[in-house]
Length: 149
Ligand code: SF4
Ligand code: SF4
Image (cartoon, rainbow, N blue to C red; front, side, top):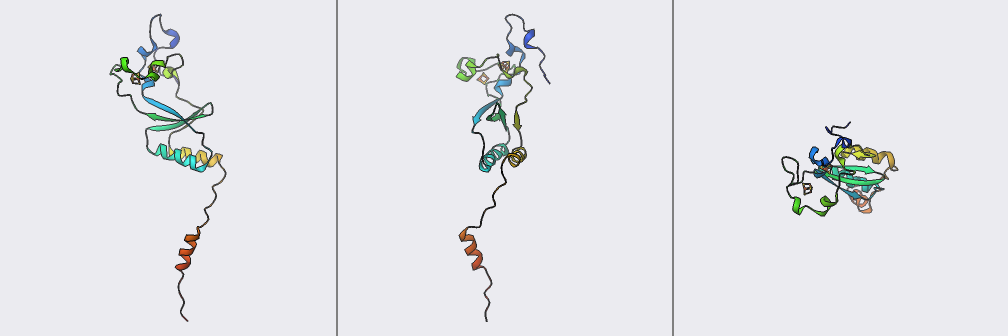
């Protein structure tokens, strides 16, 4: 469901889409991450999400870690307070395909550690049970009661 008040197609000549936006693109960043293939990979992702303020999403088979957080330069009227010195990534970003009117859906989205773990259980083979290490067995043997005859 779109929450925008003005559609892109309704923009008049000379108007800028950002004037109608609450700086959606300045409130998070997302980094591509390796596609998880093992229990260990999913365990790492579970750990990322445990920290809060982040999520993992998949778009066209690419996995991303998304970190929520407002840029410190967003002004009360949602303009950039660092326009002259803004990073290159902000300079090259355009409204052509921006998130102004997207509905926040992805091919896959994981917002809680439970979700990523449930997904791991669905796609991975069962976890192998750990065999007891030699030292553990040895320690247990040492704990056997000594019978005096
Ligand atoms: S580029 Fe798009 S998402 Fe970013 S402020 Fe402008 S309209 Fe909003
Ligand atoms: S520097 Fe400006 S354009 Fe870049 S993220 Fe911050 S507020 Fe947005």
